[in-house]
Length: 314
Image (cartoon, rainbow, N blue to C red):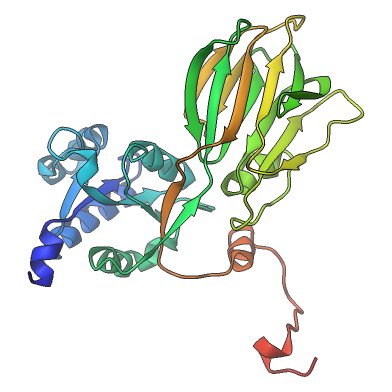
C-alpha cells in the first residue's frame, strides 16, 4: 500500500464556527489542504450548515454521524480558542480521535500551535507526525436525596456547582471519600483537572497544576467560612458537593461551561477521575513552563538560567 492509499483512508474532523471571517477562511484552507493531501475532511453537521451559509463550497464536505461515523475519525483539527477545543472534545468523546488545537482566539491555552503555523500543522496531521498526550478527565454524577443518579456527564476542565440565583447563597457540604470535610455558604465550588487548572480554577484563586501531575483541585467560590481554602486531592479520591436541604436557593452544575443540570436542595454532585482520558495531539514537546510564560505573558526579564542551558557559569 502506498502512502497516498494510506492517507486516503483517513477521515479528519475539522471543528470551526462561522462567527468570525478568519476562522471561516482557515476552515476553507484546512479542508482544501486535507483533500490535496489525500485525506477526507469531515465537518460536524451544525458547523457545516453555518460554514456553508458563508462559504457554499463547504456544504459538500461530509458530515460527522451522517456521512462518516465517529469511529472512522482519526483526528480532530480545531480552529478556535479553548471553548471550541472543549466542543471538539465533546464531539469525539465516544471515539478515539485525539484533538489538535490551532489557536484562533486570544489565550488559547489548550491549543497546540498558533494560526501562523497552520499549514505545517495540517501537513503533519496528514502524515501522522504528532504525539498523543492523555489528559485526566472527570466523571460527574448528580444524585438526588434518595441517592439515585439523576444525571451523569464528564468534564475536561472543570465541574462547577454554582448558585442559581444571584441574590442567594448556596449552603454546601464538601465531602471526600464519603467523609464530610466542611460546611459553608458560598457562591459555588470549582472541581478542576490539571488541564482546567489554568481556566476557572485559576481565576478563582486555585493552584496551577502541571499536566503531568494527576490530581483534582477543589476551590470554593466566595465562601463564608474560616476553612475554605483550595484543596488538591489525588485522582483516586472522590469529591462530593452536597447542596444542603436548608439552603435558601437552588444550584446549578456546569461542566466545561457546556453541559448543565439544575441542583435542588438535597442534591449531591459526585466527582471522580474518569476511566476515559481526553487525548490531545501534540506537535512540539514544549515545556509547560514555557507555555505558562507565553500564554500569560509572564515577566521573565533578567533570567540568567542554569549553565546547562545558557552556557554561563553557575
